[in-house]
Length: 191
Image 1 (cartoon, rainbow, N blue to C red):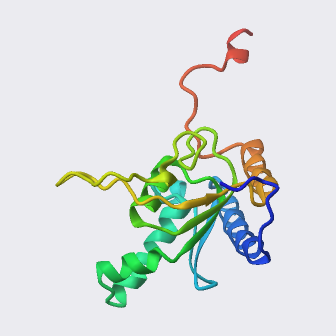
Image 2 (image 1 turned 45 degrees about the vertical axis):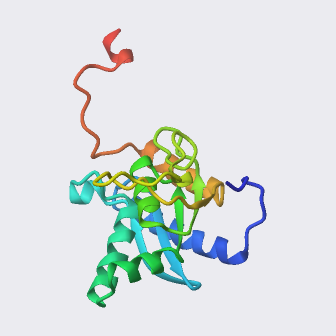
Image 3 (image 1 turned 135 degrees about the horizontal axis):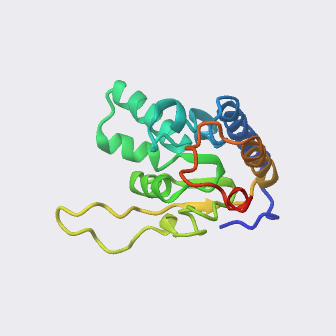
């Protein structure tokens, strides 16, 4: 994993800026502001933003949205599973927040080449903060078992302050879609 101070190419910042724009779209829609883009041969081929509230589906994270756009397009173009696997192995993902465990596992199983992310995900991070699913597994999978993933290179801390700022804005304004507490908050109970 790259350290936050490590030099990045201008392209890395340009693609991360596009991911930040996707996160801003999520924020405008009252979603947790996480956005991403997938890049192949220096071109954005898919983008996504969190849509868990809009869809009422907890799996609709930015990465999953972008992956679905990509896979649907490739399937529509008649690519075989082998061709899809070859193409995804040459792709880069830029995302504003470290992929969660679910998204990191999906990226590993798909075989994405490399992930660049903004801020760490200290509660659910799958690229080193909680688990390191980006490292993959070297042992072969037993017959009928779920594939454990190929692993991928990871670079974190890119434009982290911008990503954190968006998250802070979201949580400071309050999440109108959050479930109401079932019990009084501690400071309310003592009144």
